[in-house]
Length: 358
Image 1 (cartoon, helix red, strand yellow):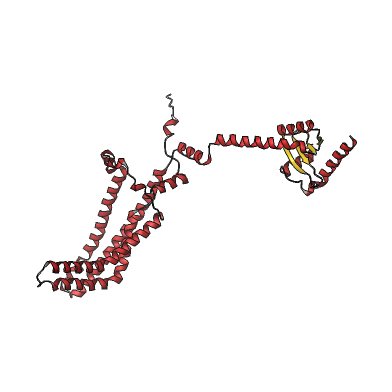
Image 2 (cartoon, rainbow, N blue to C red):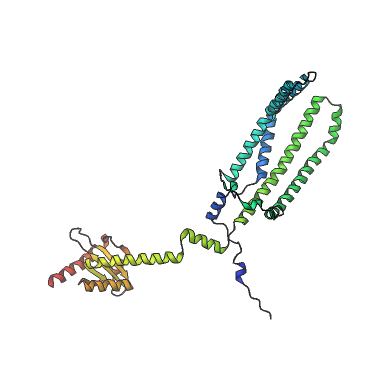
């Protein structure tokens, strides 16, 4: 029977982990965000179509002005001065017709951009990069997976839009043939309706494609930000610090805290034990009136507290229940709670009695 060895190192570099917040923030600073230009275009077209309903009378009036200006100069000698005036008039009329629509489309595109990525300003794309001048890199970009996907998407979009427009116009051919004998104003109205209808159908198709494109952009963006397990670990170390180093620091802090605590033990009035596992050192100052815990510990620390107490001739009292209650309920530097007053008072009274007898 054949045996196969699975080399886990082959999978160590696979990007299988979702991007961390830090990775996403860094990508945003570089201008790498989820954005679909198709959505910007569609929103611009929708705004233009909505404005056209109210802007049509103005456009028709401007068309009359346009032709009036052109026909005014038909019999005139086109001197340089007249040519310049005619050119300026034509530019002004065209700007008056199309300017507001174009401005509205630009604003709509900008707002669609803000909705997608928020307010973002980055100079990353302005930085000089030698790779942009590398012909090999350029060819790689041209024939990359992303470029091919964009090409396929553009071809599909063109074919679909063409089919929608062509199929609708074909369906209107019988009516268009009748318009040959209709009044001119009626023909213009009907042709305008056809243009509006086919435009809205095209915009609807583009909107569906834009939503699909946005979903694809989200997927591609998430894939591009994925990280390896090692990258996640390294980033965690950078943010949180090396776990081993943090553990050593915590151990060092515990040692320093224990050393400071042991320095307080000689000031104790009494040490209460259970007797082997727990030791609590109490200090009673008649001026304060309430005893407080100045040191406590288990096992090794408890033994050190008892050794220090014996060295400094401090009374050690064995009281299992009281020792555990003090250890669990009272932190170092805190006064004992009211419910332990009686028990502690009896211990301190006993200590003072021993001292008096001695």
